[in-house]
Image (tube, rainbow, N blue to C red; front, side, top):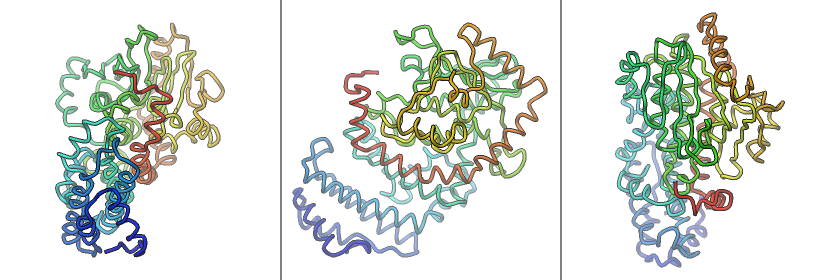
Amino acid sequence: MAPMNCSIDDAGNEKLLLEKAGLAANDVSEWFAALPELSSDLKSDSAMCAKFWDLSRRLRAKLPRRTQRAANDAAASDVIHRKERDLRERFLGLHVEELYSKLTAAKSKFLRIEALMPEAAKLVPGLTPGAEALSAERALSLKEKEGLEIDHGILLSHILAHPESGRHLCHAMLQPRTETLDLLPRLTTDGLIDLGTACVSRVGKASVVELRNTKALNALDETTLAPLETAVDLAILDRHTEIAVLRGGTVEHAKYAGRRIFSAGINLTHLYQGKISFLFYFLHAMGYENKIFRGIARGDASPDDVAGSTVEKPWIAVVDTFAIGGGCQHLLVMDYVLAEAGAYLTLPARKEGIIPGVANLRLPRFVGDRLARQAIMYGRKIDCDSPEGRLICDEIAPTDKLDAALAQAVDGLTSSGVVSVVGNRRQFRVAQEPLDLFRRYLALYAREQAYCHFNDRLIANLERHWNARSRKI
């Protein structure tokens, strides 16, 4: 049965494409016949869709692997994926509210994104990739992947586009991580927690979070996500401090040995090697970065709805050497940015071929629309100690005076207490980026970033601009 938006001629052409790729005519006919018309009943629609998605998986498995496909094979794969994803879009357009309600027991429990996706795969098989398929996919380099995680983006897009479900998911991502609550007593007594690629320590009135991916210029990757978010949680919840600081640790790279670096952004080598999942972008944007911006939410009150619905502190970023990509994105949620003289900022999305997180929403507030487009779409470098850089950076200090400048900034922001500072940051946030604006941005971002992440152009860009084939780390 042809879908409603497809003519008989289109369906005939698609069948021909599949058969040209060597797929058996009977298998192709069975697959087209299984494409369902949907109703308003979640149970029956789930069963019909699961059957179609299973047949799609079996049909796709008869094609060569992605890097070995001839033109006919690639065209057939595109047809299968398009039909699968069109059906997911239609299914979610009808059922996302009820689906999310079932996944969260009528919103009575919080599920983080990384727990929500596999639960969705169990509830409606084929809606998102199952554990076995995902495990096999994650073992491949980016150019070898089938792109199954695009389905995560489609589901996230629909959840976030639904106001109540999307707000609940944002709320879930602002809860403290389980390990945070286990470690908090130790931080209270020891004043320091070393999490490997991140560390949090108490220095006077400040909780200092340090990123320590030292072999990769403090790049952001799967090894930094949980440690950095846990460190941010601990910094916010430590009752013995009034303010939090984010800084990059000293790196091992020969060119910068012994120097601190704020962050080199997403680990492009890991991206090329297939070690960065699609959900990485959301664990970054909706996890620790949003906690820096919005604080840690109470379980019984939606963030920003009522006073006191979040526990938060003012944040200072210290930019040593450079803040690239995701590192630069962090600066856009800070209350004060102190930069080393000679440091610079870039958002090299054009050379990478991805969307730089929430920067498209936030950067224009700092530098205006035109400069934001130059930075994101044309790779413009911004020196911290320039008129443009000072729209993001509050203070520039020489390398040998940076620690003293940080101590002074901490003093300045806490000398009259932080109650009014926290109150003011909340009012700025509610006026500039209410939670619903953030949610709506992410709803579109989820789908756009998913297709960017698995696009052939991203792979070509990494090989051209990053020499990704020859890198090992």
